[in-house]
Image (cartoon, rainbow, N blue to C red; front, side, top):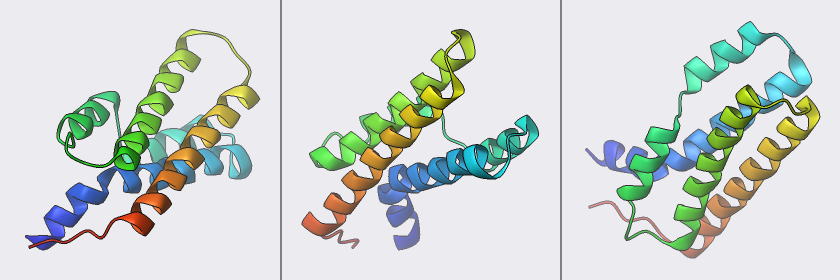
Length: 118
């Protein structure tokens, strides 16, 4: 039971790291769409999940919510990239910046708050 509670608390941060691995893999390792689809299917994440996590974390700190907002903006950028034509470099740079901000929020969250599961 404690493991499920920890997973629920750290879900935004796990998704941030997984998405960061996915983007770095696309940008630096392989440029194939099948690689991207495989990683995105493996790591998951969606706008609906972001909204759900935000609504379930109304009492959490600013940094926790900021990480969820960065994930939401990442998914929104993915949608905008699919429907509007803009450069791959701008897209990947924007995603990496958002994910690094989310990672920074995770580090601040871990330094400032102690998670106690009872």
